[in-house]
Image (tube, rainbow, N blue to C red; front, side, top):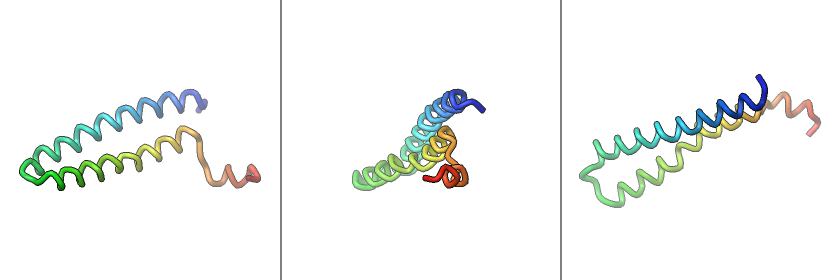
Length: 76
């Protein structure tokens, strides 16, 4: 697959990921944490605000074509 196409698909996936993740994280907080204290909200949004990075890393690595075997064969 051409790298430009991979990057285009990856960019679309990242946008969809962030939007869907934000909707689900906020909906969960609204449904289950409505009566919780401010510190619980702070902790929840701190954790969920950082957790989206994990699936985003997978998409970015796929976009760049990262492969441990390929990198080892480059001699770097």
